Length: 149
Image 1 (cartoon, rainbow, N blue to C red):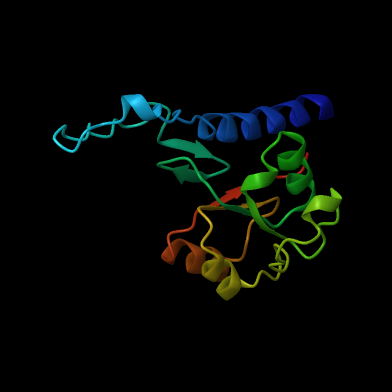
Image 2: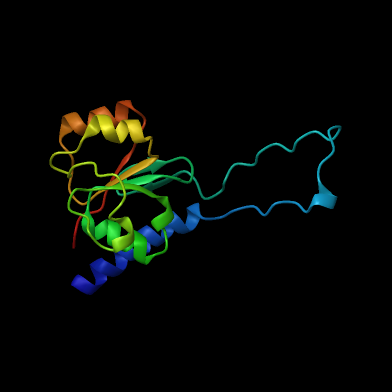
């Protein structure tokens, strides 16, 4: 049962960031668009909106903050370390994240600092307090709660 829960957590994280990692390649210099050619309209991403951990995402999150050491480790294991903009006070692995800004814990997050960092998503393994969730929601920052299994 524990293996199934870990597998589901990894699949959810892979889905959220897998859908977020699609990029368009730049045009070669010879194929650049002239000034007379109108810019093509941006097509909506068919993979969005998506709901993950109770958070509704309308677009790919570029910067995330993790308030859970376990989630931080999984994000790094899945190759999304470059999107992690900040971590909890208890995150100490992998070593490459130890220099990232610290934003408290899920129980005592530094909401003003989190809002100031401008993430598109905050991960937590436990539900934040009602006041903290409301403050982040008011700032337009969704919180994805992925409970530890």
